[in-house]
Image 1 (cartoon, rainbow, N blue to C red):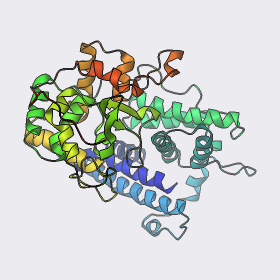
Image 2: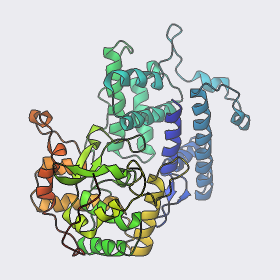
Image 3: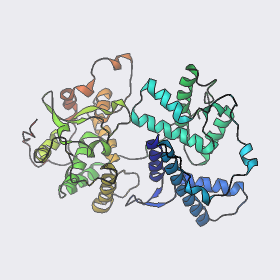
Length: 423
């Protein structure tokens, strides 16, 4: 689909090397640099670091052009690709080296297979996009898009190429397992004769230490005190992140009506929308508003918002050209944490370290693991009973009993909570 290729272009942009303070792109991605090294070595071309980076940057621009062309093709535009004139024709001998499709079978493209699989399995939109990205990497490395031509030997080729590009074994294992799961469905449904991915996922330790550290007490205190000096969304985002453990993407696209009462408790009603699709179905949950956030005056802020209840909770965030508040909020909050508050450690994610902190704070108060998952939006089924009942995600009054035991890093400005916005 066209949006899949646009998502691929966004992924390419996200992978670029970035400035640690501004989060702005400053160079090609590690994967493109690895590709440049592989290509120059394969052709016996000596290249210095500057040449490799320029080649990697050119490859990035070419991928963007290809994504734009394929997006147009997906929308039915088959006009000549003006970008092809910049490239020499592929020699016939090189084309003959690639596996050829059977004369009696139509190609089974990744997009076709995923469409069929999704119609039956109904995965979350974010999952479908992620799987599409994995299959696009397979197409990129193998040089063709037909699952019927993929053999175990070619899966090994894919796996080795991804590892050489700098991807860790856990990421490559996720790629192989995800594509293997879709192809296993295809075998059962007579779309494929066999599953070339079976048994080929890298083994061993799949997850290393977390890429981010939690905010310590002194850092959390500095951030919350600094937020008091801000206005609009920057006044409240650090406080909301501190006491919800939510992802920034889950908070900045909330609507005014998403702050409401349930079972007598004020909550953040985090539900999937077109602008904030979740990683999975467990994205949807009711997170109680911590007493410290109430006492700080957050409900007064919500009550003072004007306009429709479907309007944004943080209207002072200017959306980007696609109408999303997530990229600008992520960039600006990162600059604020690094430049204004002065927390510059690369191990501290400006927004995500709050999530690590709350996990630890809930451990300290001995909150049940199922309740912690209900707050943070994780899915860790422990037995068959996990699928019974509403669970803590639908019981904010019960969740609040443990969440309110998490202390505030600083003394709140008052102890009497307001009535909150009309509901």
